[in-house]
Every structure is written in structure tokens, then in C-alpha cells.
Length: 185
Image (cartoon, rainbow, N blue to C red; front, side, top):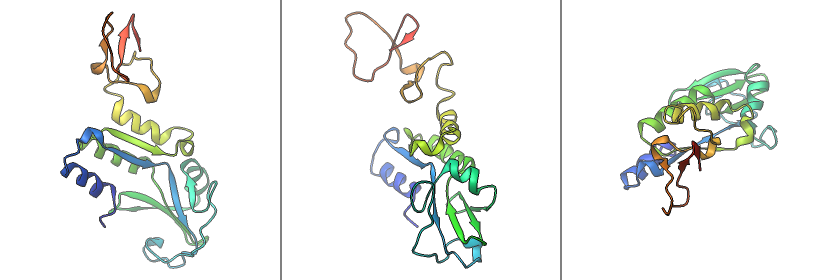
């Protein structure tokens, strides 16, 4: 299939888009189908009912936290080697769910680093209330480049090598970070 992150990102890179301007989207939810009666390939790519199962708050959508607490313990986890993501299948309930977990997120984090992309974005934050997947991405991408003393919110941190010392009568750009009296502004 050409409908995947790798193909899209490589197309942008080949078109000349700087890698630092490309972000990889990472879902914090799973997509589920019901009525998967054929157990071939553990339900993978099998026919399903057109009626989606009710997920966490909507049909067919399951928050990562909900999957982890209510489905991972009772469904069998499988791995799609081609897509590099897990999926759950329960032949009794006939529900099949594709999602991301720490293993697949860490593969995506490595892809982001190897391709020197600008980072990641998530949809949607409330689906990972414990911060397990978001924290793994933050640690993989930013832990080594932030000063341990930089006291800044997660989404506004700037690598220390991009923070300048504040000087009077200097005009700074929007979003530029400066340090003054050991505080980052």
C-alpha cells in the first residue's frame, strides 16, 4: 500500500520539504470492527459488519487508556509486521481492533529520529491520560537535548542550544527563547 506514513513523508522529502518541517502524526486511539467471524490471520483483513462496535465515546473509536484497561487483558494481542502495529482480536466477541502501543510508538519515534523529522503530534491527548505514549515520545525525542534544569512546560520547551542570553536593546522574534537571571523566557 502507498497509503502510509513512510510513503507520505518520503514524498515530501523528495519534493524538497526540509525534514525539520515535517511532523509524524501518532494516534492515541484504536479503530475497531465487529462481526469479524473469519478467524483466518486472527481476524486481520477479514470481512466485518458495517455496524461498528461502540468504543470509548464513539462508534469504532477506542481511547488507548480504555484499550489498555479493558481490552488488552482479555483479548489476544497480535502484531502486523508490515504495518508495525499491534491489533487485538477476540473470536468470542468477534471484535478486531487496530491501535498503537509502546512497541509501535517507539518504532515511530525511531523513524522520526532516523529521518530527522521535526517531531510528532498526537490525536487526541485525552486518550492517553497517564501519558504513557506521549511520555515515551517526549523521552525518545527530547530528553537528551533539554537541560535538566530548564523549567518549562512540555509543549514550550526549547533545546538549550537554541536559547540565547537576553541583552538589552535587542529585538527578539516571536517564539524565540532567551535566558535571563537563570530563567527562560
